[in-house]
Image (cartoon, rainbow, N blue to C red; front, side, top):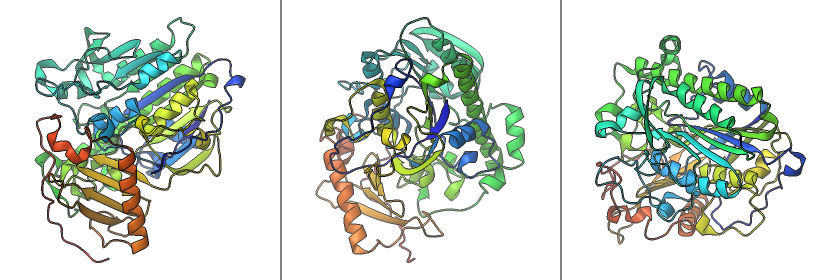
Length: 499
């Protein structure tokens, strides 16, 4: 099996899917699918992204042997909405999950009620479907969700959400609804369980969704053999210092004197993920399954780990941000050469909704039909992994978080915040990504033609892929996701700098 890394792109119009047909007839049977999705792993934190000091030999091997998508981005830079978008194929403004979901009374609002999940679709296509690790698309992780034959997720003890993120020690799991504790490094436990799932004797292909919590906070409890190395090089990777116009609003999000240790722990978690990728790879190879398996690595979103003087994701600053470090995700794909042309680096914009459609394509859903916008904006990346040169792909990428929306064409980025009063005009901030200051400072808008085009694309995209009941423009009137309140009714004043 060869590796392939994917890049993802968005269209503001309703596309006609024109994917190259996957040559499934040449395979022994319908291909297996293995997805490893990590939590908070920024695209920047990989050796194959140009960080030679970061040790990710297995991820680098996937990138070198397969397809590397250098412009893969998240549809929402927060765990729950990003994962809900992957499993539904729809935007947060379609499925209604706009922020991370807290466990406990008051926050279980029948999230994703009425949505058809990817797990259900894959079951209908004849797959055995297993989830191992993080779910977080709804608030009921202990209960097996629709479409899963195997369910190994978390039980939150005493209302302490952090217990599921412990990288080592005793972690509380739900094994198909039955409580099960494990003591050790939980990443190793989950990977072993996923490999065991391959061995169940059924005449069906398998779909494995292995969801590791690394490198999510807390920045502690990682293997000392990995942390020790990074303590010596962390400051060379992301030095302390720097700032931006966006105000850091939470104490934990401020870069402190412990930056070197926290960054070393974060990067050790990345290397621990890399080891799980290698274990899964060898698990497939040792069972002679590589030549009939699609193997994908990605993350739900990225993470600030000292960049711009902040720690965390979009809600680490006010106004909440759409920094490149937060929206860019790794996306690597391996597969049989009949399905994946190895050795590619693709620079198209791709995201988790595209990945949803790709897996359906692999499973046998006919992609050569008119796309219904109610199904979301995703488009199968089959033409890209098959090596098409002119795939008629979109030229921009969108993302959203609550009342905030973003669009980028790779050079210019527009971030728009809607006010609670719909009669008020939204507040727009522009960023010139080619400027030496990056996103530390806002920019005057681009020339009129570029400005008009990006505004039009942003508005048409969300006009197509939102519904009024769940739209982020009306997030204040929707059920609360958690005890925080990130949505501002007034924009934070920001100085404007001339470039």
